Image: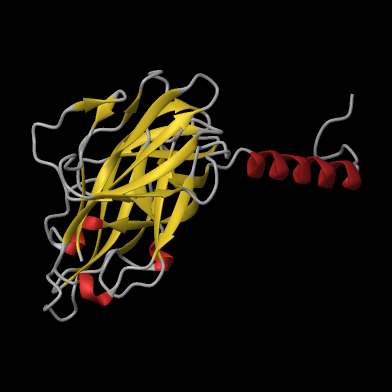
Length: 265
């Protein structure tokens, strides 16, 4: 029997074993791929899509709150659904400085994954609606007649906030039934209690004027995402509007509906 340290070492085999172990560890690294949606107010539930999420215990929310604090981070417990999906609620910072502060709070932020071993994986951008001081909020409950989906409304910050003069506001829906035909409804926000509709709530004023815009693409991706870009005229400044998506699932001809987004333009 050969005993270390007298045993000759096959250098090639040793290097191959080290490389294989490193590759295996990298393959198991936790990572984000998508947030549904990538925006929210405190209390909103965000669906995190990614890889190897089984061991994630929390999500770290990193925000620029401005003022004397500058930057802040809060850890929110995660509920693991499966290795590719987890749920997390947006925490309340209660420290975002107003736009008049120097420096002001910012909607820009990012999330990180936490495991028992500490921070891991990549980062992903997130928009903190709490920083808008109530100018932009989500409200109400989405759902689906089939009961299998919980769609959510959001937007992509790289195309700007829903404010007057934005020529390309990017309204999005997430977690719609794949292959469904989506429509964005724009109107006056409704008032609580909201009437039930399509497994969720009808959150716009049904008696007021409504604009209907078809989604740019069917919700064909894995997470059922669609979008439409809207030019918001400068003349709309000061108006308060509500946005809500409704989709028709062509596989069984049932409806799905998101929560709503309210914005003072």
